[in-house]
Structures are given as structure tokens and as C-alpha cells.
Length: 108
Image (tube, rainbow, N blue to C red; front, side, top):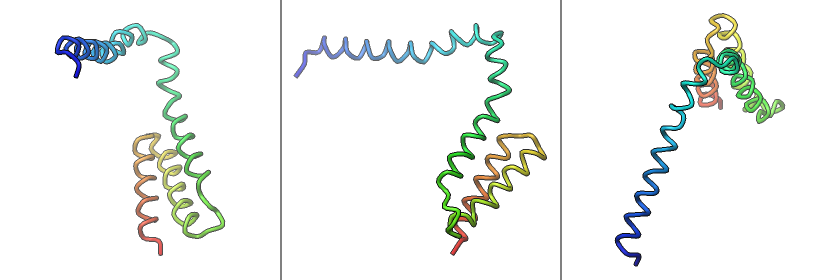
């Protein structure tokens, strides 16, 4: 069994590293707020995230099987329709996900 001093030092090092890793984003964030890259990512990322989610969902769908294509196609329509109507990524992603889950649960 390690000595008490060794264990205390290990806990202190782990604590310091954890604190530093949690504080680092806040220290860097103040410099990034005026960055043109951050402004671009702020506008482009919601659409990018939706494209990634749609690609992952559609890649896994078996369009020949009604059990997979049945819930996926209407949920995709809900997501795209809401996003074009409201231009709110959060609402369209949540509604599309809820529609897909509900249709999957109701499918025979």
C-alpha cells in the first residue's frame, strides 16, 4: 500500500490538472469572442450539425424495409419542414427526433 504522502501528492496533482482543464476554456474564451473564426462558426455550426445528424440517420436507414424507411422519411420531412419554416435548429432537431422515436415506437 502506498504511503500517505504519496497518495496526498497524487490527489493534489489530479486536482490541479482537473482544475486547470476546467479553467482553460474560460481563459481562452475571452480572446476568442472577437475572433472572426468564432463569429463564422457561430453562424455555420447549427447547419453543419444538422447535416451531420441527417447523414448519420439516413446512412443507417434501410430504405427497402418499411420498418426503417417508414419512420425515417416522415421524421426527415418534419425536421426539414420545421427548419425551413422556423429557422430554429434546436426546435427542428428536437421535433424530428421526437417524430422519429414516436413513429418507430408505433410501427408494427
